[in-house]
Image: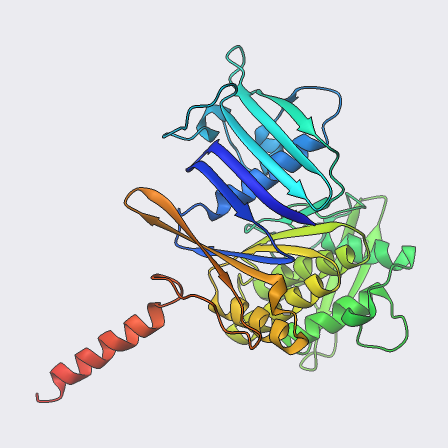
Length: 360
């Protein structure tokens, strides 16, 4: 399990030491540093497994178009003895420190020097811009998920061919069930009435999927459904896939995208169950319903000590971070300014409007 990430002169962080837990939630305002921490995790983890060279393509590692890696260096840097920025990543039994330097001879290369032990964690990542409904999906990358989730349908079919199953805590049956059945059961638990069928054409390297429910006599193509079903499929699929592995770390941006509040809460419960099944889960969210679902599930299982909320805010031109834990009953240990308080502010303003108009 990843225990801590340390940032020096990386983007908006001159220096930060950020603890991680079995379930870690990044929350906060836009442009407050949440995505930067995720990008740092992706970059350092990818760098840690590069063995035969001392350069890395930052854009490929972070899943975004970085351009000149100089943009990764903090604009208000601390003084470092060597290198332009540093990232450290600590596991329970290993730690890696990586010093990054801008290659002045090539505007696209990022040089790095690595020290420390070998990491054991396997990292899987879904970004916020996941692929929506399509007629078919790529049948590629048979041991993980593409960052846009587009190969999820193929992973379901492959897991069935391999006889892959999920831990009992994530199963809806007392006996082992097919992986595709587990996916369908969790789609039902989160969204409601959903059934699915998957087929793979290896000649075309494409996977086809159809969805059905009680309202239709025949299953339909994804393009005949809303975005929520396609967006949730990749999360459920890779989550259950990770649960069959050891040392899996799953990072998801905005798991609430295109989901009704009830489904968002159910998604939070699913993600917390994943963490209790041995998958380290790190999510970035703007949804109080996701957090509430995590809180309820953790309290129900009496494992609230495994949940950590990292709340980011930008004050006076600096990133401020508040660590929020859960009590045994699922209550938040702190409620800093800006932490999902917009509803109370809006209700207060509506009350004032009603009071002012009462005498008219």
